[in-house]
Length: 400
Image 1 (spheres, one colour):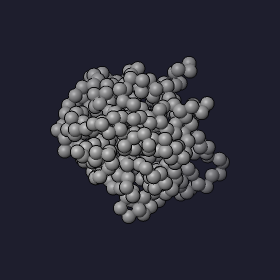
Image 2 (cartoon, rainbow, N blue to C red; image 1 turned 60 degrees about the vertical axis):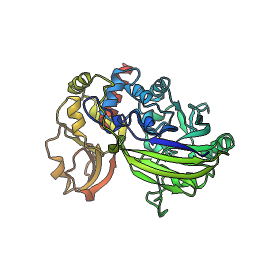
Image 3 (tube, rainbow, N blue to C red; image 1 turned 90 degrees about the vertical axis):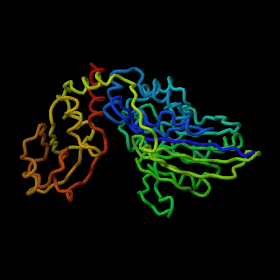
Image 4 (cartoon, rainbow, N blue to C red; image 1 turned 45 degrees about the vertical axis):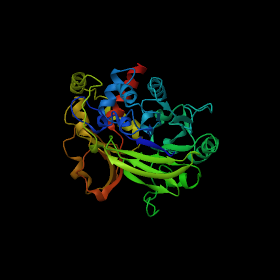
């Protein structure tokens, strides 16, 4: 008799659960009950990514997201780049309380040891399933040095190939949870990203025979398709979608049918559930934030000489500082000529810092304003300035 296995996938939830109303991520609770013989896996950026997760870090030794993950009944979870934002010790403390297996085959300590297990093997309805975890190779490129201190992320492809070779003869299905994105369109195979090494799904799957299902993420996009015989899903952001891979196996545990789909979470019943005290969170948001070192933080973070920094804040509370840095680009860098610069620099800024050589004819400036012409834009950053500044203040306090 044939047996059907349902693989359910999430990615990039970024801690978006809420106690005060229906949320997509909360709608995922109980997902495994909807699908029999199911394995549930997450592909990273689970613990960090919005002010609520900063509150959890500030107020809890173990984040309420651990309880959420355990009640979701994840079988396997994979780290994303932002899951390291509080440092490796914080991440290990959360992982120690998870009921899920936490796996990643290309994250090593500075002494060359794997920090997490490279894979997990699960048995569901008599079918053995191996799940390999994988993090984008370019972790050091997209993270500040203090985040990656004590961590070495090796090139994803050879580490993945090594683990698939080790697993293939032990299990009936091989799955990969990858915190990285797609560099090619799944239908046309045309390039859709520059080949930076940050997003390598097509390269990884094409060069690694023996993978049955592949869940990617990181880009906050929604995609589904296949590369050769490998099913691929990418499930958006904030729990907006989940992936559903279906494998039908015969009596010899051979795959006879396979299919993939990505489903909007709005198709599920909305739920409201408290994993933390929302009143305490609101009080935390109202508290004033120490802004004395904000200029120094920006100088240290971006480490550029001879640049102007112009920041407008809506107030001093945490909520007002959050609202001052527009998502997705917290700050942007522009290059203006001598005629353009005064029109911008002479505004009334909350923080105004000018550092240029005498007689400068052109000017580089950083700002959270969008009032500069886009044709002068040279760089923009998706970094969450509020979160990073909060961590910066915590670290400064710890040194005193």
